[in-house]
Length: 227
Image (cartoon, rainbow, N blue to C red):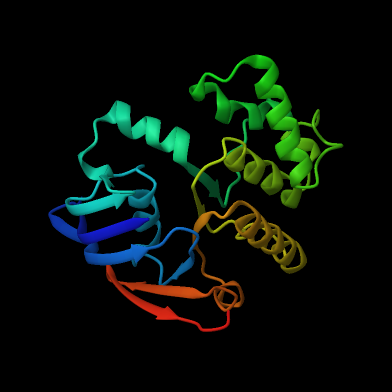
């Protein structure tokens, strides 16, 4: 479970101080699916980076299962990210010179998984997202939707507790967007993930049981019964 208390994040822009997050209080339970919306510059991606330990808050606490990520050393924070948190990004972030299989394997290298097990787990992860016949393909040989499936497999191959997605359908057309969302929602249920996603797409937001709006660094939550 995530518990955020009084989380702020400030940036310097010339002589100006920008409040990307302005006192965020938020609880995200195990197995929750939360979508975060809001205008550009409202703090959405900053909040996701704080949840993932990619950035530290200026003040406040960001607890994951009782451990304050904001207070961990870099070594311990890296370990938490490697073990417990999977990331999916809009731009896929695949290594162009590696095959789909090799791209997924990279997520297991920091965990010191042995080579044979690493290869099998990567292959199984790709099969789980419908790419069992594309293991040897480079990103340039895959469609945008297939590349995002590789990125999802890479995020899930280490069996994380949390999946964080930043505009995961932003580079896809409408039909592929729906396919990817159905895949993500199915994996969320299958693996019991805590799933937090940032999106500008109101159609996607309407599918979520919990919706947060971030404007000027301040959060508003809305629950949906029966979603």
